[in-house]
Image 1 (tube, one colour):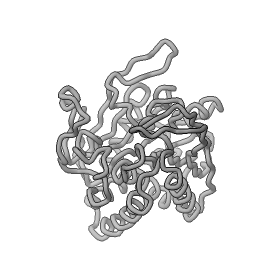
Image 2 (cartoon, helix red, strand yellow; image 1 turned 60 degrees about the horizontal axis):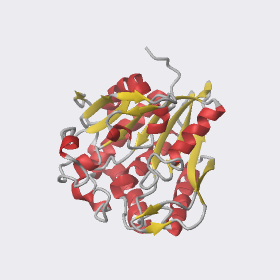
Image 3 (cartoon, rainbow, N blue to C red; image 1 turned 90 degrees about the vertical axis):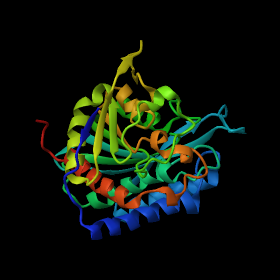
Image 4 (tube, rainbow, N blue to C red; image 1 turned 135 degrees about the vertical axis):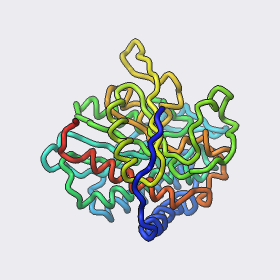
Length: 329
């Protein structure tokens, strides 16, 4: 684990304006729409419409990637009664000189079950992704940039065949796509100690990082991406950055898994499993968010919007660097 000190001071007027835009999107997802999952189909459909509208507003063509869910899943006593199709939302801008080299920026838009608003988890990540899509639409991007709103990241679909990012990563592999980087944004809005989460064991709690830093974590094939991305993020975000490279193991099928499960609890997991360079950016989720994690108190008022704005500015710069033509040093 390494800690990077922040360097760039961002003008307050820029932070204030961006904070407002981010909160508006978080409010739409977490407050107006609320709990959004296959267990709340109308809300999930409204989320899809929201993402469609925002991407199209920026000038992107939007595609839906279908994800089939069979009726054996249950969450808190609520069953899926029939085979259902849900969707990843994909917006893409082709690269000008290296269109076959693809950079993915993704964030899941679903929440667990039918009662959790999901402001930090993960309206915060979606809001940042949308802001970056807005800024990069008219930017010079030599590589292809693909934005994906993933469905079914949350329980009971985590690491299951119908997890949206698993479906998407495997389809990319089947197509032979050259994904040069994948970045997952997952819970990036809390920068204070909100208490000890009941989800964590004493052993897990020993892995807690500082409360004021944004975390970049990976394992396996994500090592070079982690070094590059964390350095660029620290250059542009007026927030400390902690880079974590975890241990991994390879199963009999050649799939790469994290030794410490929490290093793989997001949409970067399957990309790493298939050998793509990927990482997750997070505020540490349950390690920092306390009793608000995966509960009905994960509401829009809990987020630190000025810090989220600074992180988003840094993320935009780091993603912009990934889609340039410059080769690795």
